Image (cartoon, rainbow, N blue to C red; front, side, top):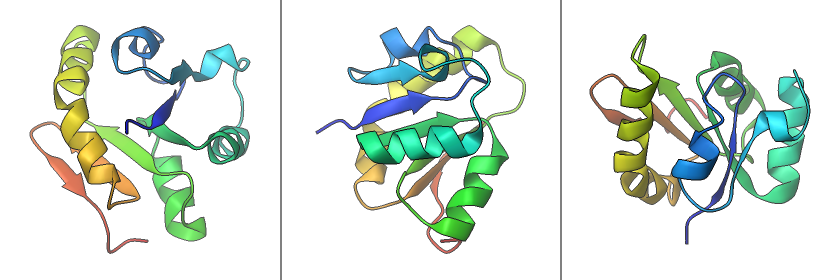
Length: 117
């Protein structure tokens, strides 16, 4: 089963319609919500957080899950290229999330970061 996804403000709202069913962009909940509020919302609604923000990695390292986090660390790439890559790799990311709390998306590779949690 594909988990619902809360997409952080630092990623395109278009991902909410193209990535997978059950996606919601943070701006649908309000503008400039704190990371803490987004984490609580994701936890309360069983959502995975998709973000470029290292603060969610830090929060997960300190507090543990839930929520699970997909951390995009691809550097500066065109929005359309990043979106296409996320859509293409989403099934593999979902498979990783079945056993991992954090999946890191780098410019070239997908990584499960188990030992930080």
